[in-house]
Amino acid sequence: ATPTSIMVGTGRGAELGILFRKGQALQLLRDAKVVAVDKTGTLTQGKPVLTDLETAPGFDRTTILAQVAAVENRSEHPIARAIVQAAQDEGIQIADATAFESLTGLGVRATVTLPDAPSAQLQVGAQHFMDSLGIDTSVFRESAQQMAEQGKSPLYAAVDGHLAAIIAVSDPIKPTTPGAIKALHDLGLKVAMITGDNERTAHAIAASLGIDEVVAQVLPDGKVEAVKRLQARYGCLAFIGDGINDAPALAQADVGLAVGTGTDVAMEAADVVLMSGNLQSVPNAIALSKATIDNIR
Ligand code: ADP
Ligand code: MG
Image (cartoon, rainbow, N blue to C red; front, side):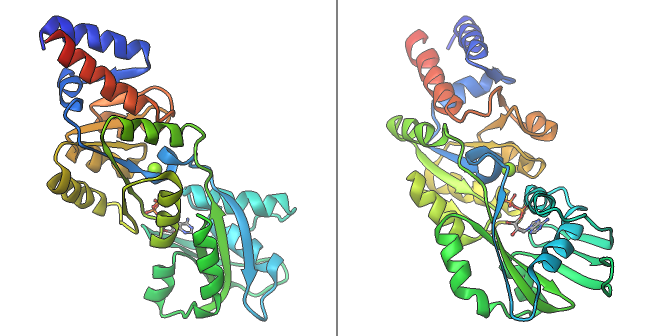
C-alpha cells in the first residue's frame, strides 16, 4: 500500500471510531486468521449481577451475604461489585473487613466482624481456590454444574475454613457481540475466547455464541501463552481486550485492539483503539484493512 492509501484508510477508520495508533496495524489486520477475545468486559458487559446464593446446611443466608459483601467491598473485581450491590439491594449495611487479601485469579479473603457476631475468616472465590485450601465443594456439585451450563460463574464462600455457600454471578453478553462474531466468520476468520473464568461456564458462553476455540481458567500471565499457542496454530492473530491484565496479550498479538471504554493501560499496549465498546468495530477494521490494502495497492 502507498503512504497515501494508508492515510486514507486511517482517516476512514477514524470516522468509524477505529483509531490506528500504528500504520502497520492497518496493513497487518488484512492477514489476520484468528481473532482472540477476552471475555469479561469485551464479549460481555463486564457488569455481572448476582443471580443465586445457596447456603450449606447450618448457615444463614443473610449473614453469609453480609460477610461476603464486607470482604468484596474491599475488592475492585467486577464480581465484587455485583455482590456488594446485591447485599445493598437487600438492605444490608456493609461491614468493615480487615486483613484483606486478593489472590489473583483465585479470589479474596479477609476477617469480618458483623455486629452481634464473632469475627470470622472469610474466603471467597473460584472452585480451584477452594481446592487449594483443601475445602470440599462436592455438596454443591450439581448446583455448580447447572449454574455453569447457564453461562453463570459459580463462586464459593468459606467461613472459618468451612464451606458456607455457593454464589452465582452472570455477566450479560453485549447485544452487539453475536452480530460481530457472525461478521468475523463471514470474513473467514476463527474466533477464540480467552478467560480467567471456569471451563464449563466459558464453554457454555462460547457455544451460545458459536465461538470456535476456548481457553478458560487462565491466570493473567497465561493470556500471553494462550495467544502464542493460537498464533502457532492459526498464524496472524488479532487480540481484543480491555483490562490491565490484557496488556501483555495485546503486545504479543500481531495486532492488539483495545476497547476504548476499558483501561488506559490496555490502550497504551494496543496498536488499534476501538472508540466504542461495540465489538462490530473489529470486523469493520478488518474489512477496512482488506479494502485499503487490496483495492488501492
Ligand atoms: P476474569 O476477569 O476473566 O474473571 P480473573 O483472573 O480476574 O479473570 O478472575 C478469575 C476468577 O477468580 C474469577 O472468575 C473468580 O472465580 C475468581 N475471583 C477473582 N476475583 C474475585 C473476587 N473479588 N471475588 C470472588 N472471586 C474472585
Ligand atoms: Mg476483561
